[in-house]
Length: 494
Image (tube, rainbow, N blue to C red):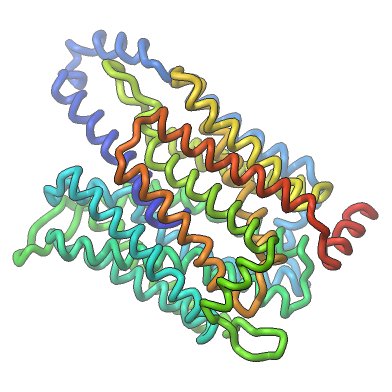
């Protein structure tokens, strides 16, 4: 996910955990005399623990079952570590750099809002900070995408590490202006993370002669690894945050507490920078004539003239904006007045397990279905999940809908990576990827600025996903390229 979304999900997570701890302390829940009262409250929890932990187990068992039932997935994962063929070597080249970049993002995400609270930033100014991050991503993203196509994706992957390092470093100061600078840097780095790394992968994959199915398998492994990294990062970040309390060293500068995960993230960013600079080759946006690409107006013209590129962008912007809006709202959806706070840390882990499951389901479905067919299914199910939240107040039903939606998220990223790899022209790939993010950032800002209710918010996201559904069916009905037809013939013959 983009850093802004991850940060806010972590914001909600840390706030609710802190609220739960404070409530327990005030009510004397840690006192033996009050144990019976606490037990009664837990027994009356609207979201049963059996459902939460049962879903974690179900997700793990389902993921293992999908992998074990598919010999191709087992051989693909085994080949990643032991294979000597060109694809395995290429995947071992790309994945460490990508996963280090994602790990740095996941490590600090859950602690941003909690750190702001520690600095005394109120809810209103917290909102300003997140608006600054999304605004920077919307405004600067299209420019950096064009520059990456022109001057090199590897250089801008390294630039991502440097800018994100600055974003994390600013957290040592408690001044609002410094924190806003950090959010702006975070917004810029988000645009780089979710365009440059994918662009480099697609370009190198095409240069190596890998087909769409092989590219899709690489994307699936990448986001499978990202889900594993998210689960691990949450645990390591929690340990790091507890090493030392938040301590002032004068001049408005601090160390320890929730700053420590940001420092750990910076260590990972340095490792990522060293790896990419030493292992990756450079590639550029090349036109058919061999000239460097990256012209913004040319990319915008292609988006307007070529229906496939436009439909791909509508799917991308609609789904991802709905995903980020969901990130902001899942915690209040699972709470009810007068009831104990659910274990959000474990719920977050459950979401990541189902996201991991989705990446494996994609690898399974890609053997028999085209990427457009998978996309149509994902959009339909996602829209149904958001509609369920709009229609039902029961938190148990909403929780199940969220789990299914997270599985759709796991399916979405390898699907969209493969689709964009086939549709978006190579000479302006990073530029168009960032143009896709422009309406995404604008849509995500809307509920932040207008303070929608939960029902209104999910009515909006359901409508937005309806646009994605219509776009996928229109795209599915369009004539397929020669490369796609050849891949279909290979799938059918197998």
